[in-house]
Length: 441
Image (cartoon, rainbow, N blue to C red; front, side, top):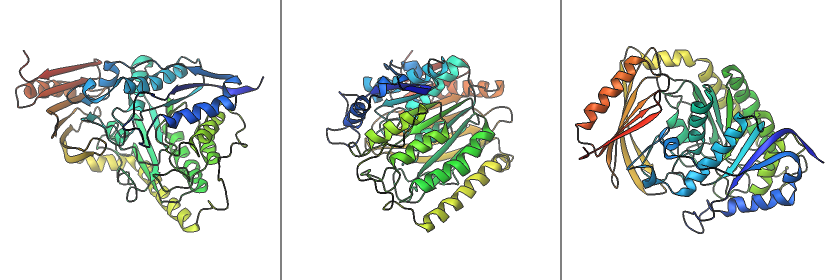
């Protein structure tokens, strides 16, 4: 029998009963064609490749990451719980050493869901990778995690969740935000004052092909990962860089994705985007599975593959090299950048307006961070959205110092007496989530 060199686990969850609408690009057929291809290629006949059934995450798993307004069930469905549960299932299989690597082929996706959730952004309601990671941190005691987001769209939700966390290295490679949703992910977005340099964005020009992507991985991403020394590498695996994808403008191929997977050696991959449902996804996902398992993927070829037609122009490579140099500079200078961002300030404030494109909602946020010399710092967000409630969200980091924890408790008590519909406390050291609602005893 054909045998995998590395034991590899898979989870499939097409979410048959959930869709934004029947013809939306993010629909169940995205995974049904892949599932058929996997069976036709006999992937499950390979010894060492195993399928796991997704479990559901709990409300507590979601609240470890998100402030959902008005509450978790108000912004999710059971399909979101199973999708995140599929990522959690494969994460547990890897941590329990039942497999060496795992790929959660699930939907709905999650990487545009930010810390505060009033509705859906970029087809995402809750961040399935972050929910998995924070569960694994709690259950298995891991600390340093690297997330490499290879979706064509900037992983703005994951960036937001880990903006103040120096234990999480977030690297996003994506089509330049000036040409694609969500319009963010530039090299000057490097993380908050207590975690500067631990967010790295690598915007790639339209029509980047295999050559450019693999240069970015080999020359920039791998050296940074080697220096960071994560305990776990997670690939936020969007497949919408493919040359046939209908909503993006890149020239990546199935062979390129498989080689990227082979180079990255992620412990866990979680499917994000990818909307070339028949012409790309089945081949990309099979190539990725074979690469994860350490098997030959050289025969995986998608329809209309023509390497000559996809050759990258020299000026695109020059652009990619220049951006790569800037990304590496940000990483090497992260300590100085953090010192500059902190200055002599005790608190950092930022205000912003966020658009939930999928649900047509506008949110206004005001964030206050305590700049702490001993921990990532407690922070609070005042959030208001026109169709939901006005809420105060307070976060205590996992490794918070006593001063930051005490401040967060004071914010919580004060907030409960102010004009908020709900006040949330995300107390990570105690692994608890507390809510006070207006009018409640």
